[in-house]
Image 1: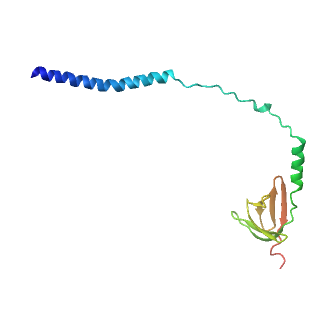
Image 2: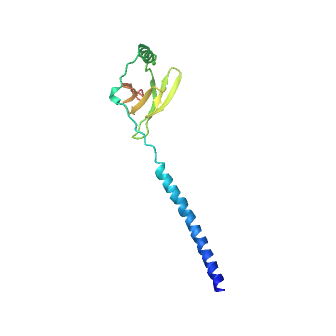
Image 3: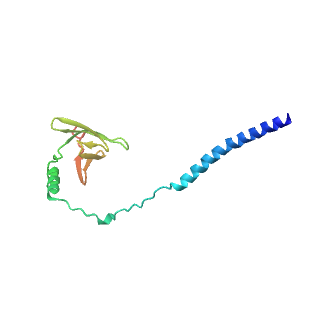
Length: 140
């Protein structure tokens, strides 16, 4: 009986060792594989940014000048305004169209409303400023 229990103990011991050896073997092979397959680090060369030059062709210059000439003249009449520290807007009229523009928005996608006060309204198109004298309420 004692010999039989010793034999069972040896079998259980071998099964436990085998169960622990398999994960160790798997992780050892995985670790070795990681060292063998190191990442391929490639050298990236960035071109010198000062070496670029801008040489516009004649067609681009003509197209840009035609676009500038095609911008409609700034002939809007101020018919109403709301002036405040944070919330300013104006109502403008050109021909039979009326436009409501808030501060920071663009009028017809071209002129940005910069400032609204009791004396004047200021729009900006790139570098140019357009001022409209505020006569709303002054013709009483």
